[in-house]
Image 1 (tube, rainbow, N blue to C red):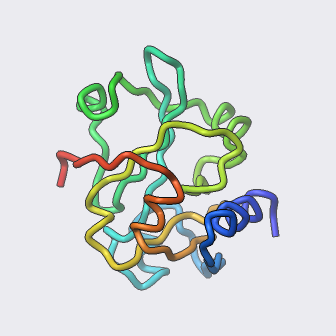
Image 2: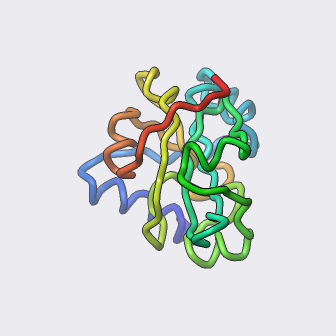
Length: 157
């Protein structure tokens, strides 16, 4: 088991949660692929997106339902400042995850986190497990609690 996967498991355990990180037989690089592999609705897939605040330079983690995109034109209204894509090298060095395997938990550094309210409509959701073909299932309220996220309403519902 890799270091990234271990950090995800340890973050869940530290929060008192039991998760089972599974390796999928197929690629999970897109929400549609992950949903097919997990046999769930695409909306149950948690896309863990990292952005950089254009004023503060802070990394921000935005957890978005797989059925949604994030319109960066709305970023300032939703997250307090304009956002830009985070540099993949910075993502790797500061979070410990490579793009494509960014998990919603287990980051090496704390950062402001936001969660799409559409994820709360499901009994369970699926997040990346720390590597591109790994996932774990979690109740959305548990994910909200463990991440300390601020819930937002994605206008692209």
